Structures are given as structure tokens and as C-alpha cells.
Amino acid sequence: MTHERHMDQLTDLPRNIVPEEFFERVLSSLETMGDIQENIPDHALIHLEGAGGGTWMIAVREGRALIERSENPDPVLQISLRVSDWREFVAGRVLEEVQRHLSVNLLDPRTLLRILTSREALELVRDLSGDVQIVIEDREEDLDYVGTVTLGPATPSVAKPTTRVSVGLKDAGRIVRGEESPQSAFFTGLIRVDGDMNLAMALVTVVSVLRSAATS
Image (cartoon, rainbow, N blue to C red; front, top):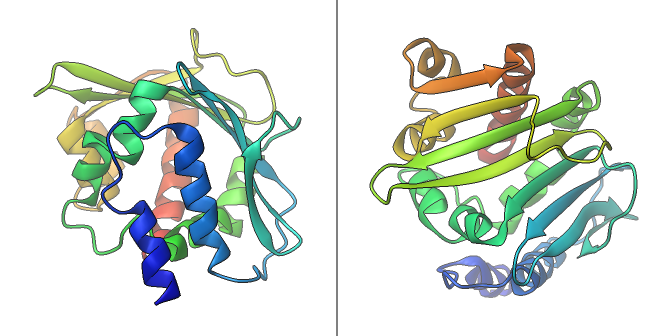
């Protein structure tokens, strides 16, 4: 019952949830999983711009998940978003589309833990550098949801990313769910890439590894 009770904290999140409350809920849920066997020396940073924003560090320390406000240097990965766009990824239209027909709940603490401790993804990320900006085009709402993934510890370059990847919301959902491969989506024009193509393909590989970890 403990797991189910904590899982409820991450189900049907309010669309106006603030980052601090969200990260507190995630950490509380992860704490129900007990000690983590993997030794993960690296950490990631999430930068959120706007009301209620800030920078959060996500790490595994001494067998426990850690999420806290911090700008700890030398992250292996950074993610930068506006708070309004972030909400669409964690509680809004992007999450709803990705979750459609997906066999696992991406916010289940067991799924989050598998993603956090994916050593294969970590090794891939360590070999990369640059900024990949992902633009999710919500044509029904006539809105774009934008997130920038910075590989390595350099200051994120949101205004001038190395690579920009654009994809429609429904197509993004199909790709994450495994109903469409990123390669075929690119060659049929569902994904558009501007900038360093090799970096975009490398990030696709990382996402594929994380998807496999999440659904294993």
C-alpha cells in the first residue's frame, strides 16, 4: 500500500503545479523504493525559467535519490525550460500524448528509478557535448513547447543551440511510445533537424536507451 499511496502523488497532477511541489512529490515517491544499488557519481541539473522556477539537481548519493535546489557544477546533463512549457511535459498535453497507450506510467517511481540509474545512457551522454533544443509543435493549440538539453557542464545555450529538433505533438507521442522509429520519422519529414545532425542522432540513441530502461 505504501507504493500505491506515493504513486497517487504523481497521478493526475494539477495543471498549475509549481516546480517545488512537483520535485518534493517525486523525491517522496522515490524514497519508497529503498536503497539504490547502483553507484552513480554524476548528476543532472534542471533549469526552469519563470514564476516558481529555479535550478534543481537530480542525483544518486550513498544509495539514495536526491533532488534539491542547487547549481552544483560539472553536471553530465542539463535541461532548460520555461515553467509554462515544463508543466506541459509533466502534467499537461505532452505527458498526456506520450502516455497514450503506453504500457508503463512514466511517473511511476519504479520507472523513474530505472531511468535515473541507466548506466548505458550515462556512458553515452558522457561522450557528448552541445545543446539540442527540442520543439514540440502542438498544432491543435497553436503552441510550441520548447526544452533544451545541454550535454556536459557548459553553460546552456538556449538562444543558439547546436541543434534544433522540431516534431509535432502527436508524432512525438508515437515516437516515444515506439510506434514510429525516430529514423523513419526523420526520413518521412515528421522530424525536422537544423544544425548538427550527428548530435541529434546521438541524442535519439540516448532516448531509445532510456525508453528501453523505462519499459523493461
